[in-house]
Image (cartoon, rainbow, N blue to C red):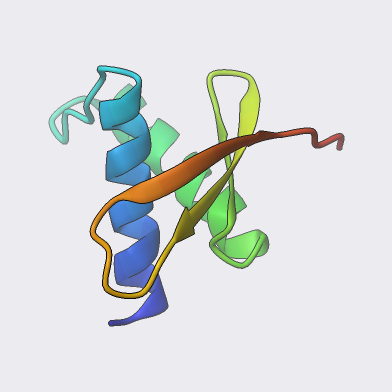
Length: 75
């Protein structure tokens, strides 16, 4: 599986964990998605910044669920 596919899956799982979703018809949702994706790509697909919090999201081989770990991150 490609790294970008995993990043997309992690973003979707992050939204689902917060009982939220991305509406592709709304510009602000797509902007948020691209900001999340850009941040994740810059951090190797491990760190995600969402709702003013940073999460380390790990996936294990053979598992479909992700492990969300709150992480401290400063700019």
